[in-house]
Image 1: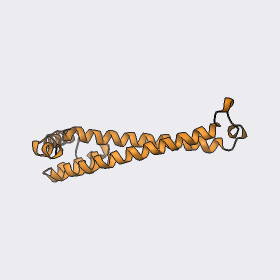
Image 2: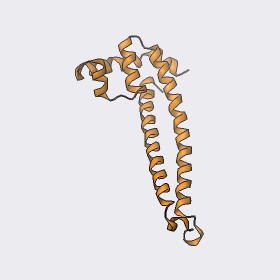
Image 3: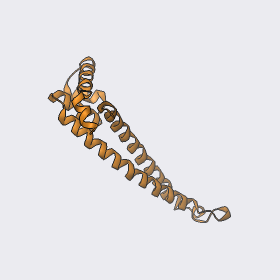
Image 4: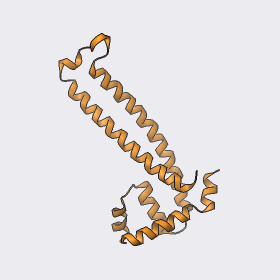
Length: 142
C-alpha cells in the first residue's frame, strides 16, 4: 500500500468510526425511550425477544464494531505519524497533520495557515508528491 492510499484510508476510517458512534448514540436513545413503555418490555410474538432486548443486543454489537474500528484507526494513525515525520518541510508536515490527523476541513486549514485556495491546492499537490516519494513508500512496504 502506498503512502497516499494510507492517508485516504485513515480519513475513511475516521468517518466510519464517527458514523458508528452516531449509530450507537441513536440506538441508546431508542433503547432508553423504549424502557419507559410496558409494551416494549413484554416478549415479542412467537418467543422472540422484546424490542428492548433486541435494541440492547444491537447496542452491544455496535460497541464491539466500534472497538474494532477504533483499533484499526489507531494503527493507521500511527503509520500516518511515521509518514509525517519522514516528510521534509515544516509546512508540508503541518498540512498533513491538520488534514489527516486533526481531520480539519479545507477552510479551517486555509484560515489556520493564512493562505487562499490556490496556495492550498499547490501545497496539497506538493505535499502528496513528497508523500509518494520512494523512500516513504519503501518504508511503508517493510
